[in-house]
Length: 381
Image 1: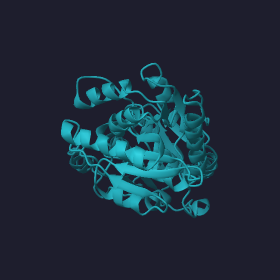
Image 2: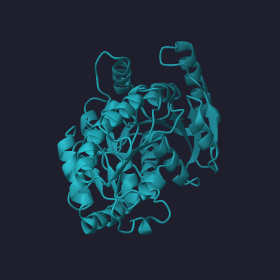
Image 3: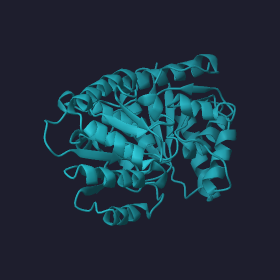
Image 4: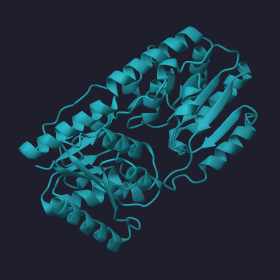
């Protein structure tokens, strides 16, 4: 008998954190237990990446924005057809935009829907706020969050039991030897999407302080603009670096699908979001590269980083505290190296890609067998 199908719905045409998690899940999903089919609601390089995975059917149902109702209904019709034609047992919507369409198709076709939430789903009268409000009210058999923090923000606000499955990643080859040899100059890397709330400007302010005290230090901002969000922010950061006198020690890489080489070359990795991060995938990427991390002490990062063991936590939006933490670790090679190795061990234990895939397989099996989901946590982050 053929394995039951799982229809994965994704709305991202480019690869951000949510798309990286989906790609990793699909790599590790046991094809003998569940047969994956992916429908992309946006065309772009991410669709091509998915198409290169073995044992995976990839199709598209492009929508022309949330306000374009005809394309939305065509996408739902396409999803419904896939459910019927591919013997789909579960619809897994990866993110808020995907849930708007995957949930409706699953409800009409009477199959369970999984809403894999990666965002806070805040309110307000902005376009995104209204989308979040709709997503919270759409039915699902289960809502999955990557952190206990995000689960707490959604419990009682969504129409389904909430289950926490931490994001998982593959450890890149050679991480055991990723700690650089001692040298005079140090390199600090900030990595993330260039959106204001991710706090790259806070990192630049802290970097200016570090540069004055440790002039041999170099800094790298890894990331670019994605999904058309905060399109002018990258230019603002460039101007800020010039104004702070960082031009000769600061490098901007732009978007990288694989930041591993930059993380491997770093002495220290910084996360500086100014509002709570739902998870903080880049922190796990840094830990898997064997690096100590300085991160904002709110949201998912506070569950990932063990303060004093794998890194340091600082108040969000505080460049003075961030600069002090950076210098503490830059000045202590032994402590920084020990933190990097402890972080690597923690990431391999708590945030393994295979463990994430097994947790989702248990969820799909629960849905098939019982039709309801018992709210629990598959892992402790």
